[in-house]
Length: 421
Image 1 (cartoon, one colour):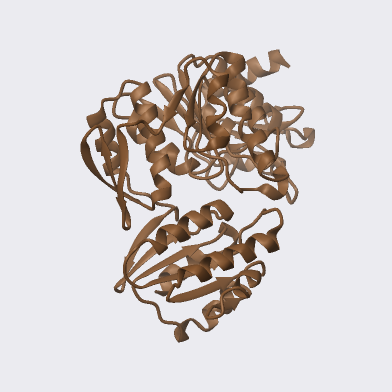
Image 2: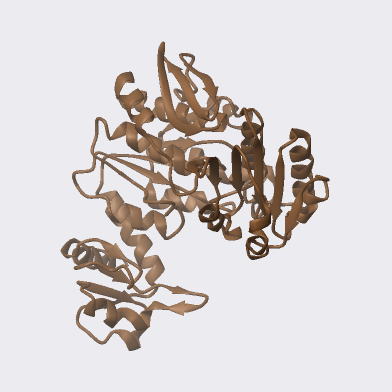
């Protein structure tokens, strides 16, 4: 196998980037023909070459019809092994980021901060799983000084496997919350799964960044000789209505992030920046200039309304944080909330969410999705629709004022509503 990976690596070095999708393939890519429950990309290997790929890797012999097509035992494993091999030759610093909430925002903030001093490479979007991590690793070029790798998981053991591939020498866990509890087996399973990153750092003498405001994580500090704790004493949250203002070492900084729940993500970026020798002035400039996108606490001003679009992910922890944040804001406030997916004891958690919403006295409350019917039962003045399509049918009968929070798991499709305001 080692000889095969060395051979494959020689072809990788002759290529320009890696692709697993013929729809987005670029000139001279190395294409991996992966399989899934409903597709087999082996049959598209020749098409990848026609579209400009330098080489293609397949694991079905009948499609190895060209000298540029490389036959592997298992394409997915070949992709991962190639990434491990490439990482072993990249001797620079690599920071892994995981956690229940805020991974992507923290990764983006850290990348902004570190790029003030270093040539960085960070995970694109949320390519943070068993395919996204190797793809990210394989796009690290020799000039990169620091790599920032986001790691996601919904089962115990997955972070350990991603660490095996990426071999991080720095690690940061944003927090431990009720995300993917259905598959992790409760909050203790979440802690066990996410802490696999710190387990790796202990074995390899790596450096952890520990959120001391999360009691489940702060207890881990004693496992390390010199952990970096955050937030630091000289970092304070001033306000969040809706945008966060902070004070860093006596300097007032206005950010473009909303919600007090984002303070921990900012604190993490400050801690990483300082550990890597970035000046406070550069850190402040990077944080002030970051504008969130991709439906993560994104503020959209539209027709006199202020929309808080947070439609990418939702779980009991992040929902509570978003609702508490909205409740603390001034003016008229409404919510459109959709199902929280992959949640253990889902009916109970949605019912508890409804009780929380009812206690806040929002001007209009709209629930969307089968699971949210339980929340609707707890809020007398609320309305409920089984899906976004049903809500869109009656959209003209609804009126909103002031600030509107849209939050749900991505599959609910609440982002479709933004254009309707």
